[in-house]
Every structure is written in structure tokens, then in C-alpha cells.
Image 1: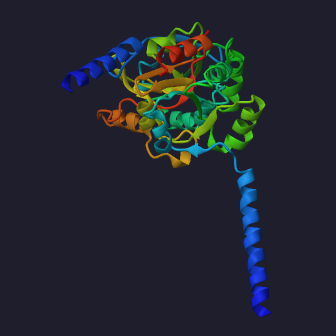
Image 2 (image 1 turned 180 degrees about the horizontal axis):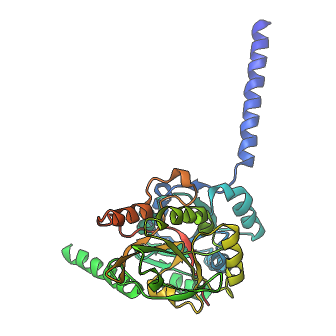
Image 3 (image 1 turned 30 degrees about the vertical axis):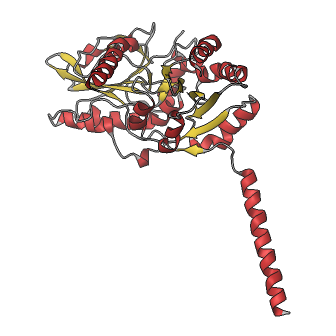
Length: 167
Length: 198
């Protein structure tokens, strides 16, 4: 009887733990926060996909303006090997208050990652030596092609770069 | 391989030249701009200073806001030693309403700016320097009546937390100049807001 009670208590504890873990998972933001070492592999895939890596932030006006065009380009190529990744440089403490609501409100479908790495003097050059650090900035690349641009892209500009260089 | 390296190097050099603006060692471009009190402030007003910490910054950019207090502290620290801060807002207020001349005046008072906050009306000064973002710092040394660029880049290596700074680039550069030494790290990069222009 004693053992049975122990087992019962044990099961209960395990169950409540599992329940808690699930609950935490549900409230954890879906936007991963990474440092540059964690982000860097995404800038160097060696496969048949063409990647559009857009560096942006919710507070960056020209970024927010060009974002729908980027999504439209990604949408246009959704049956081809073209992937848009939105790398947010918002402050990490604003993931919940700014970034997540922005994504929901603007119905952003592409993958969003938040880069938080204060050693910008080191990692900006690793994205591109051409980048001074201002936003927005975009890297379009695949295994045969690489183009970095500091500043905005229009729908037509971005689409033509992808169209001419996709595999 | 050697050819490839030479090619890449030439390409990079080309980019730097094409990007325009000033490099470390160049003579600083003279300017005369209106501060928030309506006075015209010129670089030549500082001929008695050892140098000037010129910072392109603005009201609206979160990175600029994050550095606001640190800029005031830098001015307090270095003004008496001969390196005052001069801040310039390079943005076109028609593109970024929060950076209007009136908003600058309010910010300067609210944030207790101890330095002149100038408006780059007509946006001719920032391209001459090659500033691309806010904040963007240029340390100018007064050398025989010419102001010479000695440092270009970031204030430090942590925009989000002043207490977690590991490298105080700007502070180090000015301290080196005050000590009569060469600046060790002459250029740095940082994330910032693009300068707003039509």
C-alpha cells in the first residue's frame, strides 16, 4: 500500500512536471534569439536553394516599408528553391512586446530570427565587408552567387536579382 | 591564389573609394550649421580645442536613444580635457518626422544635452564625412589649425547595456590622442539606423 501510494505520488509529480513543461513551451516566443556564431551557418549554405537574408528591425522605417515586397517575392517563388529569412536586430527584450505582435499584425509568413550579438564590429564584416552597419541590409546568395546590398530593395529589384541568379 | 587575393583586395579598395566620405588621416570637412538655439556653429569655432568628438546622431533611432546618456557623459568627461562633443542630426525630417528641428530642441533640453546639437539642413555635411548611420562618430584632432580625422566608428561595443561594455573604442581613441599616442583601433563598425533621405 505504501509503495502504491509512492507510485501514485510519483506519477502525479511527473505528470504535473510534464504539464508545466508543455505550458512553458506554449508561452515561449516562436522567434529564436541567436548570436552571430549561431546565425553564421545560415549565410553559407551550400545547396540548391537561393537565400534572401534581410537584416531589419521593427523600428526601422525603410525596413518595414520594404518588408511586404520581400514577402511578395518569397510568395512568388514559393514553389521553387528560394527562401527568405528575416533577421531582426530589435532588442531581445522587445521580442514579446514588439517583434511577435508585428509578425502577427503584418501576417509575416517567412522565418524570423532575432540576432543579438553586441560584437557588431566583428560580425558586420563577416556578413559583408561592404556593410557599414545601417539597416536595412540584404544578402542574396546561393552556392554560385552572392550579392550584398545596404539600403532598400523594391519588389522589382529584388525579384530580378533572384530571377537572374536562382538555381 | 595570389591573383585571387590581389583581386579581392583591389575590389575592397574600390569599394572604399566608391563609398566616398572621409578616411582616417584625412582633413575634416568644414561645416557651419544651426544648433537648437538658433546659433550657427562652425568647426572653426573649435580652433582653441585639442579636437572635436563629432557624432552624427538623431532623436528617433533606438540605437541613438540608447547612446544618448553615454554621449552626455563623454562630453562631460572630455570637454574639459579639450575634446568637446558636437552632435549633428543628419536626417531629413520630411522622411523621419521625429527628427524635426523642433523635436531636436525639445530632446536637447529634456535629455540635458551639454553639447551643441546641430541640424544638417540640406544634408550636405553627412555625405561629405561619409556618415551612413546613427550614431556614427568621427574624432577630429586639431593639428596645426587643420582638423584631421583620427577615428571613425562606434562609441563602444554594447549598444544595449552600458554596464556590459568591454571595448570603449571612442574613449580609448580620445585618451590615446590626449596622451600623444597613436589611436590603436582607428575604425569600427556598429549596427545603426540608416540616415533618412529622400
